[in-house]
Structures are given as structure tokens and as C-alpha cells.
Length: 109
Image (cartoon, rainbow, N blue to C red; front, side):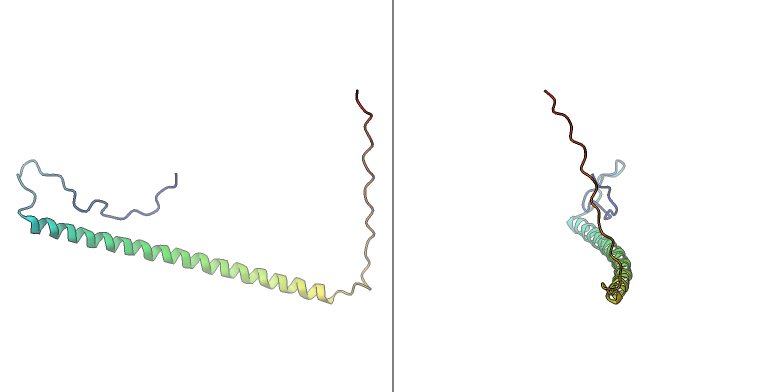
């Protein structure tokens, strides 16, 4: 199971524990909807902050990959250039001698 890297706060928008010393937490429905709206806005703000950090990490990864690709492309260009400068008629090519086959095993009965 993957570990959570980011958690959006507040996780529960409208859940409250009723205080034991008081009877009611909210006086009317307007207070409940106001609290729910403010927590929704906080949750959206936290989500936007996480999205910003996620895109920054993604941008850093893309920049790193781009640099690695440029290095590889330069290496490939150098190899192509040196291979293009080679003359197959001037270069000595070794003759490949295949290894002898393994000895045959006697049949088992």
C-alpha cells in the first residue's frame, strides 16, 4: 500500500463534536452553513497548495530528464561522428573464430 505523501486539510468539513458543558454548538442553520463554507474554502486552498507543489516537483523532474537527454544526445552525436570518420578499408577486422563444440556425452541407458 503506498504511503500518503500529501493530505488535504481539513479532512471533514461538517463534523463537530458537541461540547459537554454547552447544549448547542450552533445557534441556527446559517452558522452551520457558514462553518461548512469556510472549511470548504480552507480545503480548496490546501488542495491548491498541494497542486502547486506537485507541479513544481514535476517541473524539476522534467528539467532533470531534459538535461540527461541532452547529454545522451551529445554522446550519440560524438559516436556517430567518430563512426563516420572510420574507413572500413583501412581498419583491421579480426576474424572471428568460433569456440569448439562441447564434447559429446556418452548415451546413458
